[in-house]
Image (tube, rainbow, N blue to C red; front, side, top):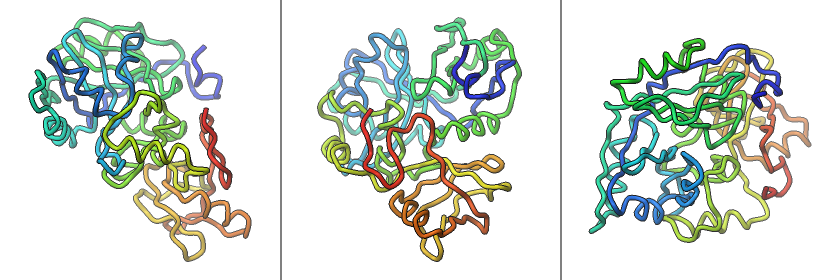
Length: 308
């Protein structure tokens, strides 16, 4: 039984959505793994036993510039990232290349990225020209497909199930409480803990150095993390974000992705706790909302964060 069936979600048929806003960066060559290992937040050695991992590339000040899924291939790695950021990601990695024997290319035009979720897991590996794997962030998200464009139709047809829009996928991840860069947090202005990378297996705290590592390590050892992306729920449809979230007249965060009466918001959790204590409603775009924590959270509102 798939995890999301146990959560009470519809699971009779696999849902498959092509994610048009996702691009792909290729990193190949003898030094590809070594280069990425010294840059990104997660541990590349995990790919010895897993087909993919979640990670980010940070500023030296510890803020997220890019986040992506790293997919292991025969010739190197594919980075599943925001399509509009793929060219920038190529340039940023190239800054650190120096004399490394690595080729870094934006190959978004050559690949299709899709997501699938439902009752039955997909066969790992996938059809020819396609990489199929469980989403490394959260099992309930389902499976990810990174397929060569020339064989994508055949690969997706082999999966079967219902073809749905990317909006259906985003509604699925919003219900689960999984944020997405550019929608729920701003690149260049958000720390990994705030975007839940510590909760979604996107940071290794044991691998050693990576860009921004000292800042991330200090945040990990604080007694609390003040801001985080959390699910919010209303009694009516939420307005489309981004919008400020107010507690009385004070802005305590921003509403991001929405799907009907559910959404995700980057909020000051200490201010949420104060509003609850004082009976002050939280409002975005004139709509009252309440905060829920995702099922996977190891932190609490108004309490020190716990490390899983």
